Image (cartoon, rainbow, N blue to C red):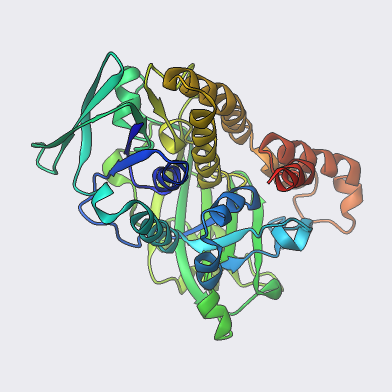
Length: 416
């Protein structure tokens, strides 16, 4: 069975490797002319690392990434609300990794090229159109000037072409731009001192003003430093979504640093981390409404093309990786490709739609807003502000929602 994947991002490359390992003939087409290690930090949850480990990628990841020891939530005064061990530190068979997104992208690319063959991953090929006829799909790819560069015929087409997916756009031409709730994100990477043991991910503040940080480089850690990935979220508007040309533009300290000027905790000087960043990028926090369906005959969607979501709970890339495993398993299980794609959709669309909806309602971050509302000046006793029973329900419900609860993950481990 020949499978064409439009998009060589995290979801597209992981899917290509899973499918190739299962015996399918896979070809990947990517719009950019050359993959480069761009971006900032990213977290891969243990349940998704399980799949990467199965592809033989754990040594490469471990050599580059930080194995996250703890996830900690704090108020805007730096007081701990909740702390949770992660990955192997929580007794799971796999780690959680914090890594530079560009480093992850290149690890996946080099592994996929080695596995599939260099000729099976083609660059400078943006999907422009496609059509189904009988049991075949024909896809047309264009170069940066819009000229037809290649036409590919396959049994299945997977649109893994991101939040602005052309594949999704053809099935839903009236969808419009992504959804925005008025929050801008400024992101940067700073070389600083290790904090909280050197392997802790922190979410501090509340929904409309939040600071997230985590170290992402083993090499820096081995030198006694921390390469700190950080994100500042601020609610700035209830108006129209900024134009796409303004996304990923250089950020200006004056636009957000004053709001964090007094966030000097006993474990981290937040304004100092922000001021000493190498570069700062600004872009809106966006998602899209869940779709009624992903699969149309022999064509389906995957990753951000299928379910872009707010970056709450570190789920975006992890869910795309889970998609890759799921579509492979369903194609192996069903002799009819269209049946397999429907089963893939039935398996993955409902849970990802629930995550999109939950993240819009703040997801697990709701604990931050509860503490801010009940104790804006800080607390002497957390139990008086957010009782343990209420906190445990918030955490437990979200973990089950995203299939990252201990019971689910241990079942997967036992099934392998």
